[in-house]
Image 1 (cartoon, rainbow, N blue to C red):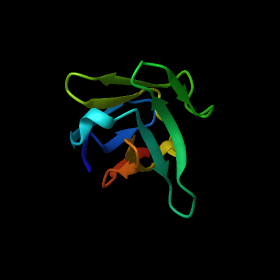
Image 2: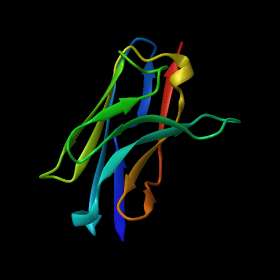
Image 3: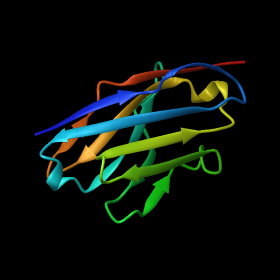
Image 4: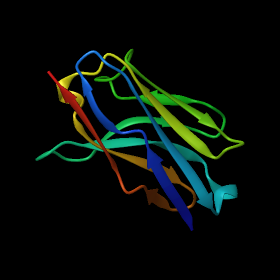
Length: 114
């Protein structure tokens, strides 16, 4: 089992920045992929960015150039740096980990005002 604790969401004006963090605990030796998904009201959950244990990353086209994902393996923590935020980035952001199974955080709200 893997437990995930997210932090860093909040309210920000368009053009601003936020940094999300997600700390993993439990069966952390089996963690491979870490990342972030988001779900806006009335929409399906969508991928934001992923990072593997070796540091390879991928991200959605809608956030490329504005968001960056990083990982501190020593702290078992994944980060999402979000810059140049837009109102359409408003969503609940979920931390995701693959460690033989899929694990999800509780979600953190990000609201971008215009």
